[in-house]
Image (cartoon, rainbow, N blue to C red; front, side, top):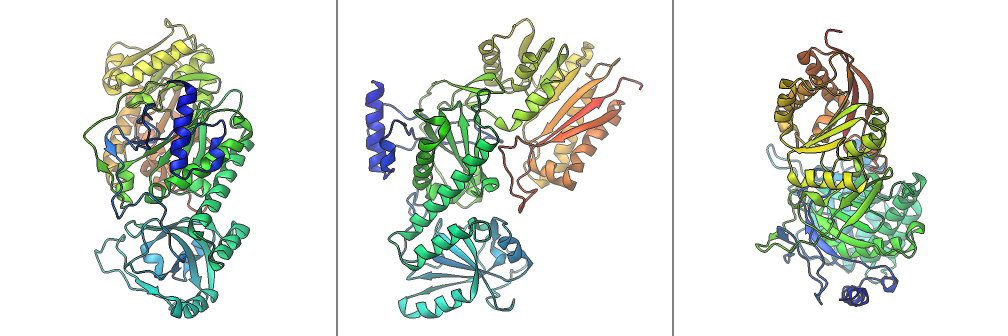
Length: 564
């Protein structure tokens, strides 16, 4: 099939699904729906088959079959739904930019001409707080032991004859903003537009609501998404992303860019990977893709470039959000379409349409990879949990004498080896070994091997607070053994990382540093903290919800000589 035939098929599919007329441009929107259980990035996908003639949603292990309750089309109603929150210190946080409203902060909900017991999943809602005293719309209290994601407040449906009374209440209330509603989630409302931060956008949304513009909820949502994604693009341009040396980066980062539950990565300047971890994203996926496609069309860095859009979701996160994906026993075929990602002038082979660990690329460590590489000239470097070899490759490019990468995944080792070849690195100086890192370090200690620089970047060991104690013991052991491999006579550097939010946020980050310090005491090596970094700045964070969005800690230590 020729490229022209592919584009014709894509155009017909987009027309069938109400993708905007601008999609008729040179840009190809390639929709591959997939699921992923990735720890912090991208690691599985399903390809769009060239020979299909209808829009199909396929996944490697799950099929996104939406039930009647979980419809994939945007909910439409004759009037925007309303959420009234309690007037207290928490509502002040919402007014100041906090993006997540929990159920116990809600006093009441309302729907005009509604007939459901609750506001439907994914509906756009206007969020207000009463100007009256704190007792008005107080709502019910939680009973002891009752889960916080169960509605405990009153929902009222009213018709046009009662609208005047309701509108009078609204007029006597303060608009907080607009968001998306989920009756099944502990995050009952995800605010996408705060009136204090986007007064013009909020005012325009309120005007559309009052004038009953046809399908106003969809139009309001698209306006909000367009503004948020446009702001995100301009912010990255301010960070010089993309650039000649880097074409792979995080374009939209959830709450950091005002789009809670939604992330977008640009890979190789040719592929946009949308990652959905909230129910509202699944409900409004067509609107999200339409807006993203239109903005990429107008992006100054992608003029004349075909950007493929791939949709991914995380079933475990969606399940927590009350959204179930149905499983399909048939796995899709592999698509080994290769996309070259460039970061800090280092090239990586990625396979965003394929299944397996080799699919993904973690751009959150971009600055940390470059930072530690600058200390590696003429040094012997060990990259533990090397994944696709990012730290080792950067170290070699910066003049390291020798690099060894270790990972337990054969896909990762194959990818790292291929990436070294892609960057024309000397195979005699850089090598990658498939082995459990704990076993490798034990063997290396027995053979009295030493390294000048060690990078330890394990997967998420503490997915939640309940696993923190067990994870801290694992971090302790790994760091202790890594320190024992640092040059005994001269000492050296250890960059140790955690991508566990529970570990990063505990005691403001001090908990992880104390764990590493304890490992130093066990190894009988003196450690000195040089710097603490987080994710690359394209992984933006909201100051109103910080440190909730902080998950990555990369701490650089100097490990002193033995007996110092």
